[in-house]
Image 1 (cartoon, rainbow, N blue to C red):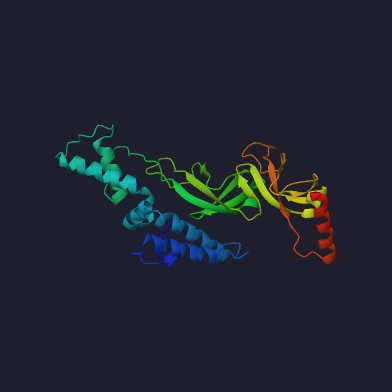
Image 2: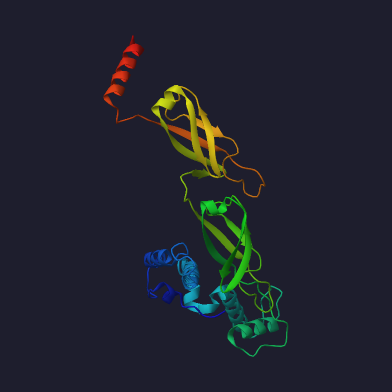
Length: 297
């Protein structure tokens, strides 16, 4: 893997604080976001690098490994384990006291392969590759239907299917798309977290949706019909006479898709907000006064 200077990507010094890293990332992410730069491949690539830099430098443990091992930071645990094993072996005067099932040649081969030594004749120890973490930013309307998308992680294009109904903060594991294994060991996995922005006027709670709809006073009193926007189109509602502000109706099956449950949807809850008119004509005021007298008599 080629070395990428993540400090340079974010335009910060190596002494930057966590707050400075977060501030730099947010500023640049807004500037290079694909929604702001549609069709700009350079901006898209820059945005991907920014996300990688934030995943590394924004995590104190990852940053510590990156500062010490550079491009090989994903293998930091394996390196340090090998160092500990080598030191333990040396402290025993050349006599291996390790009981984990590895031989002296295993230690020598692995340590040599990690740090440029000559290596021994035995079989090399295998280590699983590091798991990668990435964040995929989507809008709510982009997860209403199952869709396929190609993402690029560390220069590799990954074609994946995003199931309808995936939730904000949810993490899925893509097996085998992490770091390379050591000495022929298996690759790590990619842990992909979804960051879903609600770009709608609906409130989402799992598969249920909630929306407040204005209702004019006359329809609230006399009843009637109302056209309401759902997530996938308009519907006509019958409003009962005497509907109170705050009254709620449920539209069954008009909510959000249930994750990995084909053709299953939550419900949409509509809350009415009755609006009192403020621009009454003199005649309208007179009529309301008459109604008030009739009602109180």
